[in-house]
Amino acid sequence: MSVNTAMIEKYRNDFLKEVEENVEEGHWVKMCMQCGVCSGSCPFGPHWEHPPQEIFMMIRAGKRDEVLGSESMWMCTSCYNCIVRCPRELPITHIMHGLANYAHRLGLAPKMNPTRRFAKIFWDNIAKTGRVNELGLSLNLYFMDGFGSGVKKATAMAGVGVGMLRTKRLNPFALVRHKGVQNPKEFQSLLKKAKEVEDRRKGLAG
Amino acid sequence: MAKKEYSFYPGCSSERKASASNYMVSVYAMCEKLDIQLNEIPDWNCCSASIGYAEGGELPRHVMNARNIALSEQSNSGQDIVATCAACWLGAKETADRLDASEQLLADTKEVLREAGLDVHLKNETPIRHMVEVLIEDIGYEGIAQPMQKSLEGIKFAGYVGCQTNRPFGVAGESFENPVYLDKMVETVGGEAISDYEKKVTCCGGALAFSEPEKSQKQIKEIIEAAYDQGAEMIVTPCPVCQMNVEVYQNQINKHYGTKFHMPVTYYSQLLTVAYGGSAKEAGLDGNIVRAKKLEEIASK
Image 1 (cartoon, helix red, strand yellow):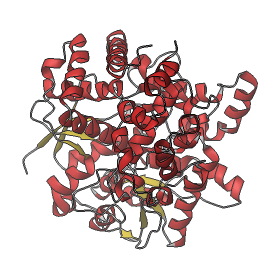
Image 2 (cartoon, rainbow over the protein chains, first blue to last red):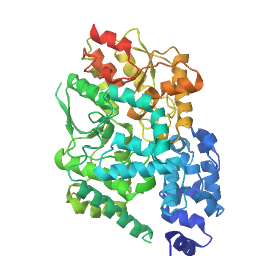
Image 3 (cartoon, each protein chain N blue to C red):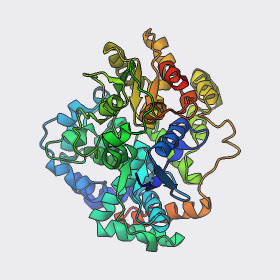
Image 4 (cartoon, rainbow over the protein chains, first blue to last red):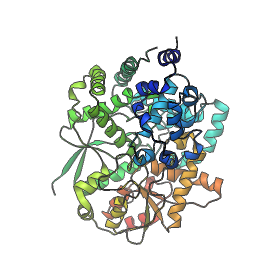
């Protein structure tokens, strides 16, 4: 049984409870009073299919598929405007991150969403050596849809790359040699263990 | 003035030949003049940044930051942790807060850190601060003025504070909507800080400049435009992500919107280094893609 099916079985029609128990800071959702300040404060507000205020109401209305399958949370730029302006002090940014992570974990997040894909590339990048490899990060992003489109995207970005190289702000040899933490294996085992403990704690062990 | 020592968390973008390497050059030059000693946290790792949540979840993210805190408390015991990057500062500080608030999370984090023998070093009692806090609170504006050899008179700066240095934690005594410390820093070293910079705390798109370039570049366009509107000659910022996003996409924005942007985007530490008599190289000005010519001129005098 997939983790998603297990969660549907466990919570039946109580999506709010599912969010409260599994999503980072999810216990705050019921505190939203629908004022809409978050939605009006978001720099990417117009691009959200459902802005945070709507997402909160949809959770309470049990719209599980619509929420977890939405592109909305993936529009969060982590600017924290909503957090500091919310009159009820809901940690909205973290709840959006939490929902995105939960949807991604259950395999319900939109597959082709560029921020979801970039986030995965970013995590794999840092998990490898413990420190960001900026060259690897950019190239993996440009080439994620294959070689042809990668060349096109990389060409479009060439001007930026040349500027960064010229000012010594990009290491052209980072694919062969990149300095990370002293013991990457130990670092990777910490992350693996952390995921195990978290999955156990949240019943996501599958 | 006695030497002040801090446990330093420089972060990934600050490394040699990384996107904010010139920020780091200027930070070290600035700190030398202010008699600040930065003791790098040995073997630090990435904070997981603002985009790590999606794949990383909660605990792995907190473990990453807790590892840094433990390493700092092991090697640089008693010294405040200082970060120069907004995301590093935010990530570490957020983890410290969460571990403080939840015994469960703290226990889980220690269980994981035990694998590397670091659980015994994690006390989670070290203040986690941004370099601008050190300047404002520990050095003070008078102290910032003290090593001055040159004035930045005649340059108009748009102080772009951005998001993560400002929210959700911010700097004590400053408002989220209109923080003034960056303007005060500019004025302290003789520069002119434009008032009414409308986009002072507007988001540049952050990590989404990579994944949603069109949407982010619209933000960036407005940030630069508002600086020009008020007659600014340069933008100054405390954040490496803001600096990069606002500087490097100007050609693409010009192409798309028909604008003619050529706006230097500098760091506060570059301003201070030049004011303290440092060369353009010591201030990392050779690392700016859009050259800050007026600052370079003052530096060469």
